[in-house]
Length: 484
Image (cartoon, rainbow, N blue to C red):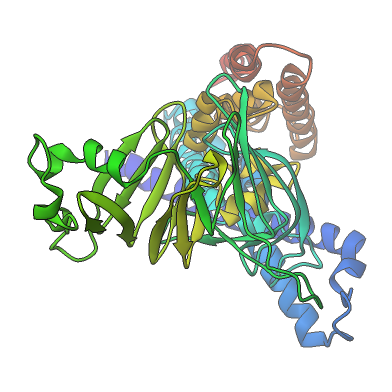
């Protein structure tokens, strides 16, 4: 037993050393090849003056430091097969395999510690794909001449978790801002029911959404442009200065009776609904649920005379618009609001002071930056892809499903590539060069089989798992032919 453990430690040590050398060599070749063809992109000045050598080297280090995560996933299977081949070729060349066989130990037993180590390295590749790469996807999608700052780009037809479609003239990642945004609001059946537009919007992580700001035209004395929420069939659009509603103070009192105590209200007695004042700071009290609009405020104040409300004011109001599923979609927040009665229903509503429009969704600035890349799905974790598929936010569902299945299928493919290639090196009937050539041909043929199955139009699950069955059967036949 002790002898077997010594052999295992010896084989594992040689395999890990070979794996480290293969990792360094293959990563260096991959990086140098990319650098050779794209050196000029790192030296572009982007209009900020000539770059110095330290700046260029810093950009290269940052770019390839993150890209190494993607390169390791690409080369993981090759590293495992090459390390196993070098380990066994060395043992074959020094006749160690002959000595092991003469001691009564099967050559299949020699493969066991290598397969276990290969499985461990495969786990590292899987962790890299599912944990490290998704956390760094914003850096991975940057261009070579765009390290340290992200270039602005247009946003076209991106969707969020509310089925809304996004358009923007320019997205600036550093400022987390979109210019001239247009958000087309859709219900669960993808039918348009409104849109949001404004001069610009910046992401606020505390609010969990995009805050639309008012802006005055440049070099002009005209009034500032305000963000607007247009709802199909509404008499007027809501904006950061005015919220149209057909409910006046009297109607609001009737809706709020339950919160005051129920029954007929004595207006002279309540004179400003102080019973609706929230004592705990930072909390809001719901005043009115009305269809897809819900009004919340810390206080509703009334100026009452002769049983008639002359004026109504809200302190710290929130006007929350909900989608067809009843969940908050967008809201207007303000320091205060005063009710404006008017004969024209389109001009009746609340005047806001310090109003802001907030659109609530899961489309963060990081997600916008990632989605500009054509390979953005490759940098998502399997759980993220599954969530996007459930929400219907993936245009190419076939590719997304194939990526999910391939992530876990490649774990077994790398082991099978190892088993289908190294038996030629275990054989003592050929020299090392001939064995290496057969290993390269066999592993290359297996790789071709794997990638052809993924690009000939097979269903995603079949395309990812069929090569495991086919190449696995070949690996079993080749291993069985080894004389042990």
